[in-house]
Image (cartoon, rainbow, N blue to C red):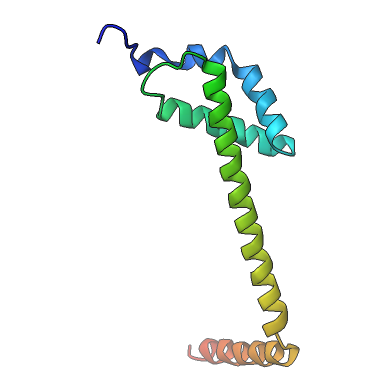
Length: 119
């Protein structure tokens, strides 16, 4: 089709022209420099691995959408990870009895001495 441009035309050179802008938007979307840097790098990887079917008419609008969706995914993943970690820490605090810890350590010590005595 003559009217369509190849997605291959959207290469690193076209994207590099928007590098500073991508970094600014990433910093506006997430808290912390490290998270913003990670988001910017994820966008680069995603865009280069899966370019749009056609070159977007408004590249910055398209890139902003990619950044926004990736930041939403990152926030969701972070929230889920934090909830799992908090639940695991809570279970550990509830389930651990100091007497059980001491008994387990003594058992492990006896097993280790028994194994060393096999020689």
